[in-house]
Amino acid sequence: MKSQNPSFAKKIVIFASGTGTNTENIINYFNPRDHVKVVHVLSNNKSAKVLQKAHELEVSALYFDKAALYDTKEVLNILKDTNPDLIVLAGFLWMLPKHILQNFPNKIINIHPALLPKYGGKGMYGMRVHQAVVENKDLKSGITIHYVNEHYDEGEIIAQFETELSPNETAEQIAAKIHQLEHEHFPRVIENLLFPEE
Image 1 (cartoon, rainbow, N blue to C red):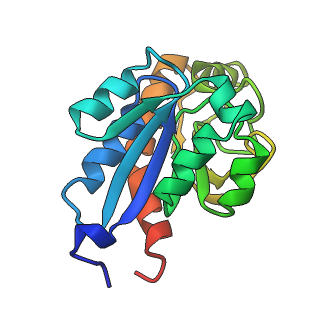
Image 2 (cartoon, rainbow, N blue to C red):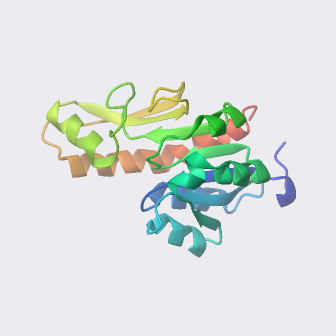
C-alpha cells in the first residue's frame, strides 16, 4: 500500500555530473506522487546544470569535491543522515567509494546508455558509447539499469530496454533514441524497485 503521507514517503538521492535531463525527468515523474520524494541531488561538478535544475524544482542540490567523497566521510554522512531508500546515479562519472557501497547494499543503481556488457567500463559514457556503437555498425542499442558495485558497469542487471538502429544513423541520432528510452523507463524501474510488490 502506497502511503499518502509525505512524511512516510520513500526517499531518493540522485548523483549526477552533467546537464541533468534524467534527474529532471525523475523529479518531475515523482513530484505529483506523495509516496516518493527526491530529497537531494548531489554533484561533483560545481558548474553542472543539474544543480540549477534541481533548485528550480525545489529539490536540495549540493556540490561536493573529491575529498568529501573519497578522503572524508562528508558525503557518506549526508547519506546516512538522509537514509535514502534508493541512491540513483544518473550520469554520474566517478566511482563510488567502498565505504558508501558497504553502507547501502543493494540500494545504489546506475543507468548506462548501452546494452551491457557491451560498451561498459571506465571512460565509456555519453557520446563515447554512441560513437562506439556507430563504429561497430550495431543494429541495436539501448539502456541498462543495474546495481552498482566496485567495478564500472559490472553490477547485477535490473532491466534492459533496446531500440533498433539503421546502418547510417549518427551518434547524435542514437543519443536521441537512448534519451527517449531513459526518460520512458528509468522512473518506472525506480518505482518498481521501491514498491516491488505492486
